[in-house]
Length: 157
Image (cartoon, rainbow, N blue to C red; front, side, top):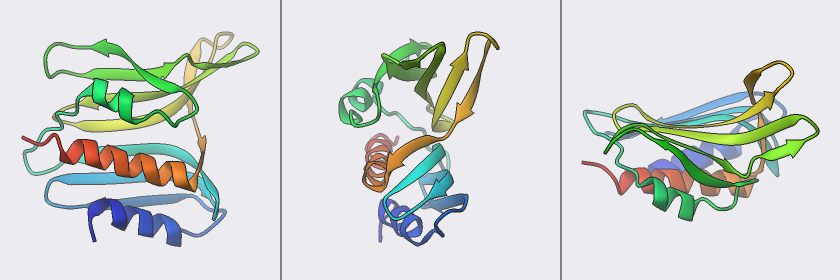
């Protein structure tokens, strides 16, 4: 059973209506999924992390990521790149706006540290952004996990 299959199997056996933290790893990758809630059909994703192990680096092509992950609430766009092989930030483009509140996905990719995906909510009256749970179907979450692992596995040095 590969890494993606192990995570998906653990997701399927996670208790409904409860928070869950699911981790799986192999010699080259560590994957962690934090859920605020889950059911047979959907979940509330708090965070998804993919980290390199054993001296590896993630050399994921951010452009390829934007082309592959097109099924979230909003599409991803590269916002910031710090030099060749440095930190890259991707965000929802355009973000979702409801009244004064803006919400968006953010992916931070640092080759030596890994990749994290979180949904944020920005309230201009408060002047701050806060992490929020992202509602996803089980199918979308499983696809996202598989795609991120595939991108990471294809990128190792």
